[in-house]
Image (cartoon, rainbow, N blue to C red; front, side, top):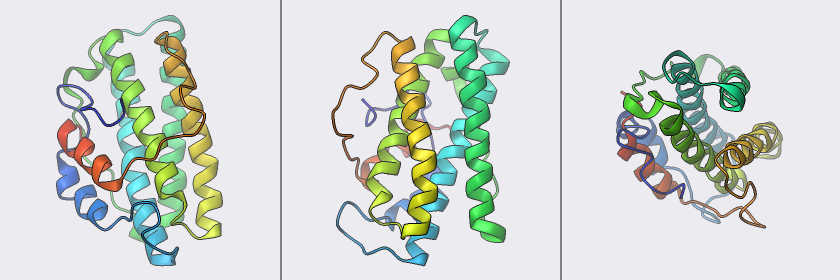
Length: 191
């Protein structure tokens, strides 16, 4: 599901100019040895994902008329995604890119669209983190793992709210950098 187009607008048209260039240089499983330079590329890509997620939840809280558990989910996860982005921006220091311009179209217009898009976005983020983990140096891996585990909880929570199995796989499937790139480019969230 995470490799599907997110929705009508999806995730990142500007990924072609920001994340797309970066993703083209990200390794797939087993392709590259960890290094400080690769850490920077992967953490910069993770920051793009976190910025999109933080913006997505903020937009939904403004527009989607969420209630009950879905509102609790959006508030909690949105605050945590913002914290993830801050953490990554701090780790990247002065070279961290500015947050992208975002447009979520109708994906945050109502509770049903929001939930469907949140599920796909969270699943995509977990798979992206897991796939790139092997390419991080031990220090960067420790920092990314602290975020990835929370991302997995976000994915399980929204899956549960959507009435789906919160843990459908015994082992998290990997998702190639190219598949993540195509998904992001097809979505249109980043301007």
